[in-house]
Length: 357
Ligand SMILES: [Mg+2]
Image (cartoon, rainbow, N blue to C red; front, side, top):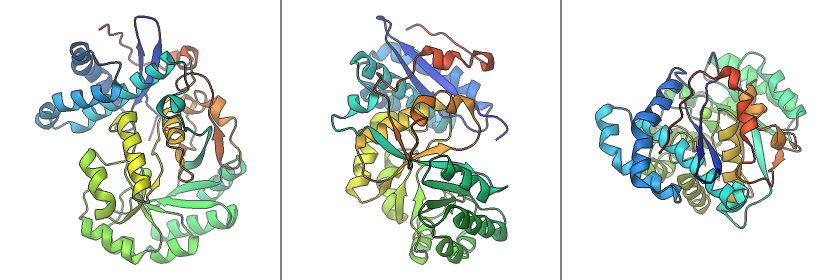
């Protein structure tokens, strides 16, 4: 990634209540502007027709149905799903603020006040030292990018393990880099490094049998979910691919309503539920509130450990509490940020559209 794009959707009702949602747009980063246009030209006019903003999850359902054929015909199920997901999150935040409750408590009376998080996006150059810095800054778990040269991957993971010690968790993300034979050769390193999970060792479109064969050969649990796109994927793939860890991204598909349902289902199936997020602070805070609403005893939210002021400054209040791998959520309404937090980035604004419904 050469930059860190964000599409922030801010909604405001006739009484002046606001809500924020973030639309996934990591790559290619030129797609950020396109998603803003897609919302303006195609999706928001439909919202004006449906008038379901008091029930964001139901609105998401209706819009998904309404746009199903267009998504197929245009060959763009991804961008459409990303826009609908971010919109659903913004409206849920608005509803929580209208109720005067933090988003987590708006979603569940049993929401926990603090959640576990882990440091992610650790690049191969200097990986052991970055992992060490993450632990020194308060994390108790971190994830290193692998899938490059096998020797270098091994060196990085064993190096990270030796620097962070045995008491902290270490994960690895191959980002779909391998074929089954290559992934099988990783078994020894995974074991030796004491990995807590191995993420996306195979491509999302690799056969289920390959995932199952790998799951059988490794003692390390397999993780995936960021590239799932649709209910069917979340229902069938965890079992079909022998996954131990499920990682949906609420800015890529489904928004909060679907994420809550997936989280409950994951617990029922005995899967570790670890929301994926690698964008700005709005989506990160939303992910943290969903995790808190599920009141899980285990699993944690992904936090990009690379520099990105739109993440670290927007989420500064919550992440300032980071201690022993946990953060304490704010008691402010919604996801807990105001206009000033987002307006602080006005100088970086590339496209802004004001749409009245
Ligand atoms: Mg990943």
